[in-house]
Image (cartoon, rainbow, N blue to C red; front, side):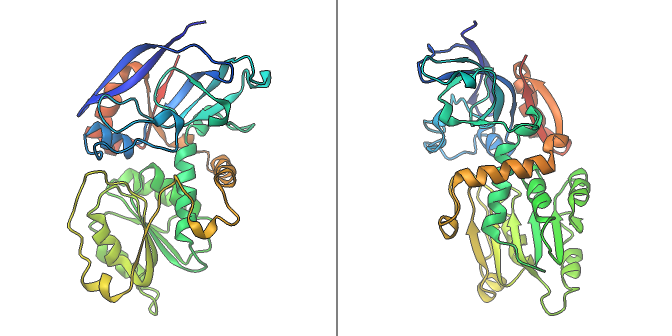
Length: 341
């Protein structure tokens, strides 16, 4: 059995390199996974690709495969699905042949301990399972925002995480679900998923008019900022009503923007909520843990079947082309994945 792996490295700003690496010897408590697909995160990974990530910051202390700092050269990625093709001496033989998900960088084969893998539930295809991190993130956003009966809710940004969040919110009994995105194709998909209206960023007056149909409460009760653009916080504040919530799910890296915290923000007691999937909000930890949230994410993934959002597939050897596409023509891509032979 081959002990080689094809791995992707971010080597400098706007530069990636595909390397052949020798895998370490499989230990008794480990398994070897053959990757089938891995998904590019168009948010976090593009910050790394553009050199906009905070330097000397831990990649992700909570993920075994992502130890170390965000510095070049960096092997990164956190959404891989594949099949267990070998098991260590003390690992239950039932692991052999299992379909698994891992928070693992982009590479054709990798070694992991079983406790760091998620078994893909029966009936879920590899192409859907690769969306697990994004669906889990969307679940976390909904939990943190706590949308309530008959509220007016807005989602800024209809990239893949924004679309998945919209899909989940569409199942709530909201009086209005509005979305914003700069790209027309994403706005069209947003409507298909259940948003009542989807606007371009400069359609503020049209959105305010729609919100104003509720004359007593003419602004949003809850706004999600998922665009990845810090300037969008001004739009979120403009749309938010008195005593409303703004959930900030974007990670801006080193991007900065002046934010207007005078005027409407100061007078309207708007609450800014930081939401990040690595942890659960303390208010839910009495009855929720990561295992329960993962189970919920798998069920939501089964319902949404997000593989329909895959717009491009590349072999890992063409990684440079994939990132160039996302950097230069983001309007043409929603979810890009790597395929492994």
